[in-house]
Amino acid sequence: DYVVVKMIPDNRLPPRHLHSVLTAKTFAVIKWESPYDSPDQDMLYAVAVKDLVRKTDKIYKVKTRNSTVEYTIKKLEPGGKYHVIVQLGNMSKESSMKINTVPLSAPDALKIITENDHILLFWKSLALKESNFNESRGYEIHMFDSLMNITAYLGNTTENFFKVSNLKIGHNYSFTVQARCLYSGQMCGEPATLLYDELGTGEDSSASKSGRSTDVAAIVVPILFLLLVTLGIGFVVLYTRHRRLQNSFTAFANSHYSSRLGSAIFSSGDDLGDEDDEAPMITGFSDDVPMVIA
Image (cartoon, rainbow, N blue to C red):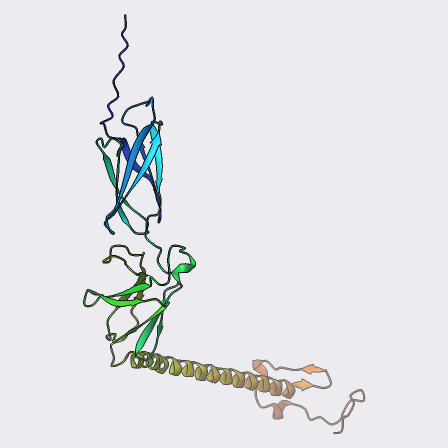
């Protein structure tokens, strides 16, 4: 035995499992399920989007018979904060969630150029990669002093560079550049950060840098000079010894050369002594030895 029971749909129930599928800079995709399974008729939903920054509301209507509903909320702002409420059109119980859209990207190629008494920050235009950014919005620049542990707001500009003056010697700074924040600093772009720690501890930054370069030169130049002098002296000594050995060997070989035999004659240690007493006197020349008259 069995019995079939059909539940009466309760249109006062809230939508189920409301969540975000995708969040981008200017739109968000949300998804939810009907209050009960397998609706047998079209259901009208009211999607209310409250801008928590601008304090404005927008209501969209969605009519569908599907059990699972997917909806795209458009015309949002980068870096915005929203409160989304979904309920049936008869103002039944609601389901809600919060959405934070993706902020604008950070400026690219942030770099520093050092001048005599100030520095210049340069970066690429954000409009090159962000179609939602208008140059009239501009950029804002912040500076963090690690020694004092304070962050300062330096100002904003619509240009792609910014001049920073009155930096203290011996301090390390971090500079950030981002799309200018809107509505009391609640909608900002991602910051690009660059560390600047090249200042010395002297009276002036340029003087400190020149002093450091002078100190390095004062150490390196004498060392290089001494190396060159040492190499030169060593080369002269080696060359002199080589020439002296060559001349000594030539003279020694010539003094023991026998033109008759065509080779040099070297005596053993036993033959050393007074050669004039023991050597016979040469009385003539052989006929086969040519005489050379210079």
